[in-house]
Image (tube, rainbow, N blue to C red):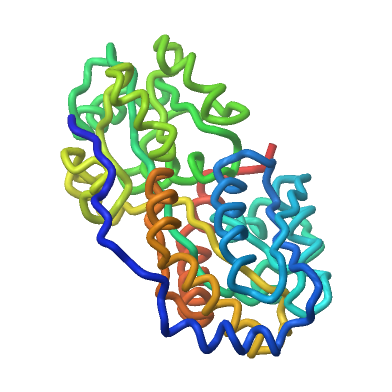
Length: 326
């Protein structure tokens, strides 16, 4: 299987965003902007956030400073932003975790919908289903048949309870007809890989950036990618839909949020600034290398519609699988 990076056309920073960015200089106070990331520093959410923040700092009147606030999953950092002043100086950079917090936790100090205004979708990262290379399956169809014929016999690994990998795995089992496979959570995908490589746990659905090195080295066998159409990062790899799992599409995604009630001019200006950064050739190249499908075309309204659709998609999966946070 050939895995390659997409070829990028030369893209200049979006000129249409410039007037809105200039308006931001008038709308925003001069203090630095805190971009709260409710995940650990150096992780797969923090790295893109810092890259984007660095470029935002160059085009906005304020420096954008990333602040990692972890605790109770994403609850601590998210709550900080929910209760922040509505002045555009404290923003949230979060993921699919934002869409499932209200069903994962019995009680929350914030409303993930009512207390936030989506600003812009930065991008989506697909996932790849891999199996131990000694498992006697060559395709996703083979795997589904094996799992269906042996309910409860096999295990799958994930990077942790309630995370994107866990959610996407349960969506696969659901869409494939309610397969019974045991979940073995780890503290991160890197911790799970030794057991998948040894065959102790025979399969894992991991984010593409983590999966690709193992596939390129021939350490594991890739069966499907979670995109709706084939992806340039793995053009020879079928999608789940192609391989016979209907209506399957899953990503972890990255989105900017402001506290609800933030003035519309500030939200619009921030949206324009984010879209301008996401259209920069260097940013696109670096994020594509991290297997993110970048977006530079969302509005606050389309970001809100995307979030609503993700909540409607994932909340029933969390309930059906009785997923609980660690």
